[in-house]
Image 1 (spheres, rainbow, N blue to C red):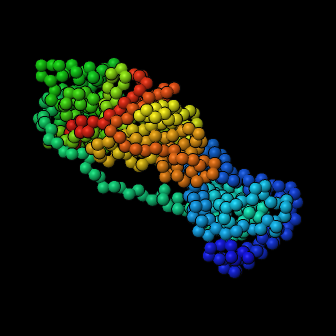
Image 2: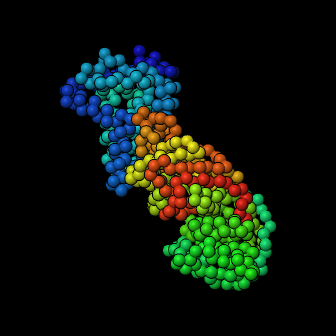
Length: 507
């Protein structure tokens, strides 16, 4: 009896409704053409294929935000329906003997009956899209209703299975909307690194500071010259010109009869990294004035404004922060303050930042991941001697958050480790790689529940003190501290953590 097919058994009233709906549908004579149509239609929705295709159409029509919300809703609904609902309630599907032969599926489902996963996915995707684009949702609604009916017409489910799946799908879409619309919690900032006393250089005497006028171009920042003249009138200020070599300029000053007691830089992460390398080698403290577009290092050090940095300089307060050394077979060495990466990660970050203003980071990340992986091929590398096929390797100096292959920020500058995230390729589809690149390990776990994307984890994350990466084929290129390399001096890169290697003026 239908009432005994679930755990716990169905109420008799619902069981009677299921039987009545099944009898009515099975008694209708629809003809072989209609039966074939519904079999094909329900097959098109297997494994979410219909909805992935619909998402592609939405992206092509300029609605990537609605498509992303629909797919996220589908993923959550699929997880709840297949992993939770079927295991807890389960139940037997309608008996094949009651289904007209012309309607039966070529392969009868063997999973538990409740809920209908097809319906859950259909309603989740459509509702998720509708919450972002009501017109697109209305256009998709007949497809979702058709999927639900197809499960009844082919005898794959009872009516209550379809209703339950629809409820799960709608709930998943509303949950995704609630999560993505919620205001993010702002964590209490942790101390960025251990404090140290640094030289107090009155009026900037003994400070050699470089100014990169091209950093942060187009952001409307004021000319730093008046502020430097007011706060650091005795400093040696050099405005960089085309063709200037930062390392040569600093080494010339260090070789002078009266070498500087501290170095400074007005610029973005690339300029800061170049000056930091010389400061580290000379064991001099560094003054960082955030003049770039993103200023990741300055923000991590609590240097949000010029005044904050200059106040710390005037007080002689600072932090001993971690850095890393990037070494090449040629003997060349470079200092890494924030991150180093190879593969598609630098291109992904650049593409994501192009779309953040319009779509926000989560959706911009998905758009960027799809576009970058679509035009790329995996790379063959060795990571610490182990051959791997990868899309990208991200290495952060200290731990980065969130825990994804494409993290955004770090909260400390003295963790004393390298944070490594590897996006594996191998035989895994680009679809799964794109989701993992955009959203990270948790999203990959959810997507891996889909039958056609199953497999071992895509993201491998670990910490280390040293890491060696060698190319085994096409050079994947690399970047560090926001600067893409145009010349790779050798095919083997070694990154070594240097705890507390740099002293920076900071509050």
